[in-house]
Amino acid sequence: MVEIFSRPSPIRNRVNEDNWFFLQRHGVSESLCFAVIDGAGVRKLLPEIDTKIRDKFPRFTPPAFASYILKILLEEKIKNEPTCPLKDALIQANDGLRTEITKIFGTFNAQYIVDKLGQPFSSDPRNVRLVLPTCVITLARLDLVSSRLEFAHLGDTSLFEACQDGTVIRHTRDQMGEFDNQALESVRAMQTYHQIKHFIDAVSSPEGREFIIQSGIRLNYVDENGTTNPQHGCGVLNGLPEMEDYIETGVVEIDPSRTFGFFALSDGLELLSPLDEKLAEQQQRYQKMGRIVRRFGLRGLYNQMTQMVSSDIHLDIYPRTKLQDDATGIYVQLGTEHGGTRQ
Image: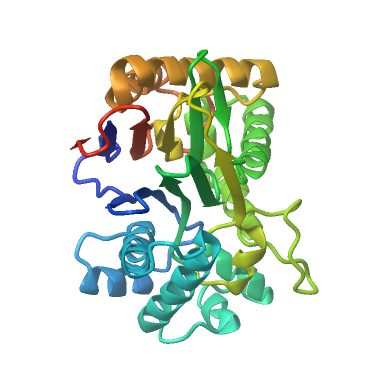
């Protein structure tokens, strides 16, 4: 059984910046290939670039543009080469995104682009990361014959394994979580210093926004010498070739006595968490997500997450940058008919 769920944040006229695809291959080597793609908001919006994107893709924001381009490129790649290495597929798709961004900007020269931001950003070409259309992804391929799942991953989307005994294993790392939390902790400290009543007001203030903007330098991070460092940055697809050093890959050998199914999520479909969440509390949250998905599906998980959002409209319990994000997920339950797909 396969369930696919995708819904934009409940904001009037909101375009869903998430994307997904699901491909099934029949024959001697039957397999499923699926991806959840999450458009990441640009830290600094250049109005002229936003306009050029909308001229070509009406209603698209830069994140929606990036996730859509990745979906199209990866679908074509996997259809034509269903057994290609997933890491290579991401590298090629990132190259293709760079080509499309170049068509929009007229160039991919970092200094030229940051010059449009003015000071203080134009003094460091690395600040191009604040402007580029960006997305993150979890890409997986499940071989139903060899009972083997492989994945390639960038960012804060996720791949979970729901086990028969109720435990849940997260196979991908939240590459962005540490840096997002650092920015949010800075906002909270500023909130306390200025005695701002609610977190939503602090994070929306110019000073609060500055902490979020500054965290954008962590995307496909390079130091002043141009050297990547996964300890100091996170991987995204934004056309920058440094992305390759941040790709996370893995293989899961499926044991029918252990594995009940897999679900891939954008971060907008995960249950909310406090900034000071302990490891044990995180695992409890994951297990709760697994129970909900197994019993009520991804729609049930979305409903639970929405209830949490409704109980925290000021962002005080679960500090974050927005009330509610776009939510997308794919759930593959093993041991049953794989031909059916429901959305």
